[in-house]
Length: 248
Image (cartoon, rainbow, N blue to C red; front, side):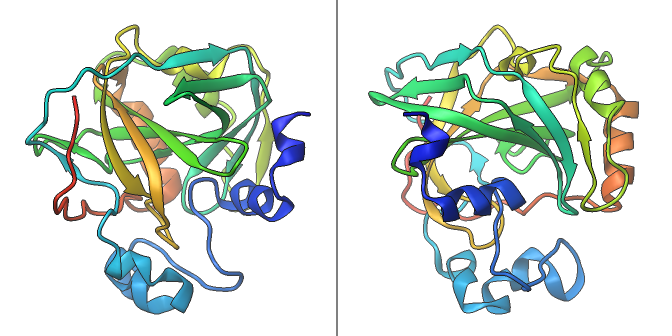
């Protein structure tokens, strides 16, 4: 039986609407003013982990612990379906067929989306853009593969996506599935690993995070186009690491 038919309907509805983010119906949240990240925990009782959680994401990745991390296995046969402007990010929904395997589990790719500037930091360094590839196994456990973008040459895959950018909130544009989602990733797929959370309300914890060490490039113009569409930065500030190990 296919994964999408085995996941609870509610789980699919939540992630179909907001991607890595989901929220109680009717509860507004954002990145500025009274709806900014520092207020998320008080906007709704369901968001309390945003304020009380001890394993929150994003973080500043530093103080690494050396570990024998196994390679992530990427199955990259799925294609892209559509591009959605949900008001908080630009989300790319994916067809079935792409997944990662780690810890003896297969996590199917649901979608990926973007933040500018980056949410996670690397040794205190902020990057101009970050993509989050959101996965779930058949039990609803989540895994996020994070890709950092540094400024450089125009990214040909981002160019194809940006040609279809939906300008209005709630708008969806169908994509020509000319490439597979993991084609965005660099050849070097070594990674940092930590346990974290959703980076948006309700900030649910228990998410496996894999931050790819290799960067992709993106042009300043491509970053600016995305930032202009969002009208403001859409990154949550880094959260305390506490006693969590950050493996590399």
